Length: 130
Image 1 (tube, rainbow, N blue to C red):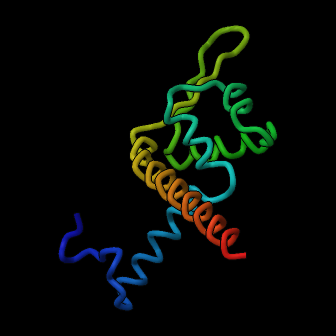
Image 2: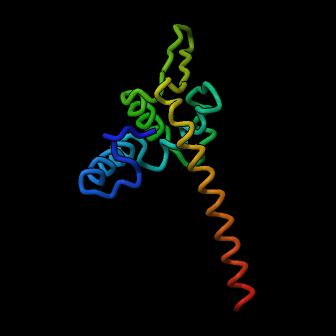
Image 3: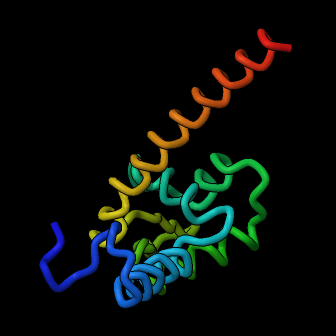
């Protein structure tokens, strides 16, 4: 819920647009790129070890996964737990801040499902017209 002093998504005034743009840019700075949202999606289901994450994300390199995890840890999105054992055991999980992304990813999922359905219907319409 927005307070009277905070811009809503529909506030198209110059000030509201600037604040909204800044907030969207901040979100994209934190979550941008191909892999971060997918890593978060995997961590929404629970704690994962590095190799589990890498296996669940076909195409991601070890270097890229390491970089993305470090950036998200620095941003406070994920927690890295190191267990003092041999061989070393490291687990990754979402922080409380990371958990706040759950509704955002659910909304992205819902939008993707709707988009796929619309594209399918559009394709079927094109096929029947052509």
